[in-house]
Image 1 (cartoon, rainbow, N blue to C red):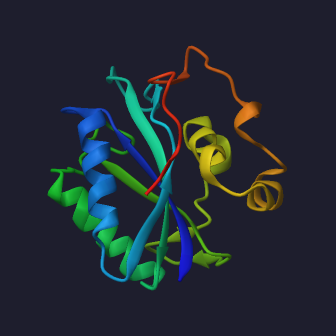
Image 2: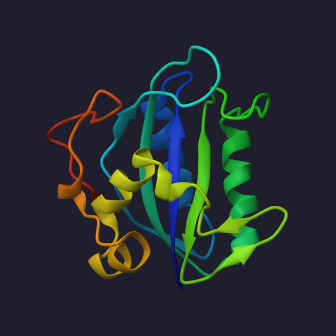
Length: 167
């Protein structure tokens, strides 16, 4: 099994419901096991025009699917949630991004792992810090941890009582 980390985000429809549904869909993938997921975070939309705030989370998934198979499965889950790719960084019912796939380095026309912009996005890093092991956080991100982050006007814990969840 390969440990993968997947970012989840939604700002259309019922975002928390969309993210919870996507977690269930990830848990149901063949040859895979949802291991853990972060707390849910709210974040200000980064992208064109006026957009609703996002709900963000990160999931840890153990899988025997190849990275390409996992990406295809994630895109099917997005489509099941009526994801429409109309405008880059536009509003969406569901966005799933493969952040890490074990220790693999992948750079193809359709997939780049580690995700090329995750280091710049606190709405990815903060939920990842909830669930990733310290060794990974040290090697990939210079030792961030959940204490590195505080609620701000741009990113906040949606429910103060939430904790990351083992699946």
